[in-house]
Length: 221
Picture (tube, rainbow, N blue to C red):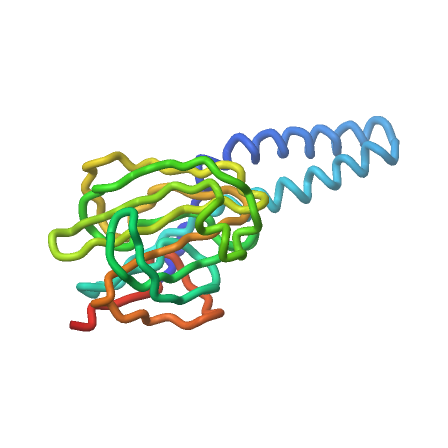
């Protein structure tokens, strides 16, 4: 559930500070020099300042107490559910769930299942729109594989047409707990999750999901 606390991601502090200085400096200057161009710059900067605060919001989340459940690693909309062969980490046929993050979603990424980071790899790539299926394979991405002794989960942070920087603070061999913040993808992106066939997908196409709270898969055996 949501808590009453709302934080701003540290990744957004620089953007917010710069825009805030420009916005308030322009507004102050306009009070001294009544030029239309200064008013336009001030208004535009102030709108961007407010939007940037909104974009980098980081609400507190509490993961559900449910064993053998895979949580959504991001806020967004389910755009693909499929059965595919995952050859990087799982190396077997599994179930794939793709989440599209728009500019208006919370962009903080969270761990979907507790365990140990066994795979961690950054790959350069293109910047096609994240909602396109091919973006999963050819866009810039950061892939993560987690094992918890019983199961393995593989997922990717994928950059989009606007997202030009993927933040990932994980380390190989690190023990992680479900719901933990681990990074973000700036300004629109995609997250692909691959789970073993033994898991049942519990979300539907076009469903809105909430990172750390929505269960996207449960063990069916």
